[in-house]
Length: 393
Image (tube, rainbow, N blue to C red; front, side):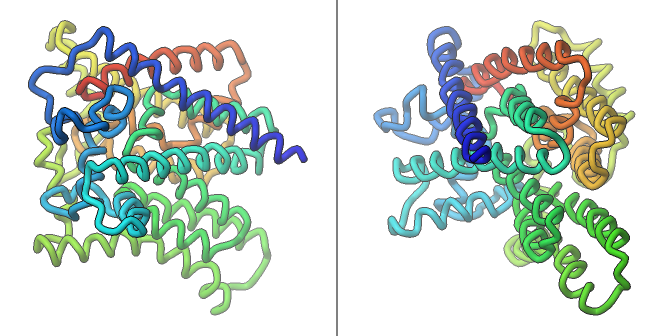
């Protein structure tokens, strides 16, 4: 009975948040013109002006990366290897009953909208269930609230892979916590086919497996290896499969990495840049570039997201959040932040779910709610800008 009430409460929270996301679109339509010179980031650039999708309450959810995910789903890969395959493949699968569905059609848009919203609600439900394994119902609810209020949470409702990635991460840990290693391994395989940082699930699940094995008192055996450890070790297969595809199609197994260089975002694709080096670079940007430029504010947002992520992961460690969660989050944080730029970090921090667990564990509830209020206001501002072609993350 209680579970049903909580599911309804979470559904209500999700629906209110989802409806709230239309507010920034009304604001953007009334007061902000599309960013000049960046029309190619908008769905309206790729469709006819008289298309029903060319409407201010619909098209912004497809802006930037969403355009490419729909293209891949409808026409396959061309030169956009930087976008991993699982999200567009799931969308393509949903289109199959409708025959050949090309990209940027109403059918494709409706199916994609259903997909991202179902995924978003499942994220809320399963994240609550994961938190409840260790904490009370209040902590579970406020962890979900913090996630949905986070400044870049609108990406969970956009045609991006963030929602699917976060859902598979949470499900993998839920299965591991319940000792369902085969399902945890399958979730991990799918995760590494969603984004490259999904590889962080491997060491995290190995930690979870080791905790279980030590506490069980069982001797290591072939049976344990086949039924629990082997499924965990197979999690990189999603990434390996995409590497094979890259090797066959482009002659370069790491083309999905090298292709990132085409985005002109200063990301290093041939080496690792240590975090302190990038922090120094951002300090120079913030002290040399004029705050009158939009890029200065994005640089500030990016470095703030990084510092916030570091701080909250430290808090999560101090609050003794489960070690396997922290292993995943730290590696998933370090991979993109070690490329010489913090571009995308405000969005990448969104999937570091231990941060939102740590927020609920803050003793001072006034600080927590103040942060939620700041999150709420920033999400309105950032989605308003995103809707008009201003790069956020």
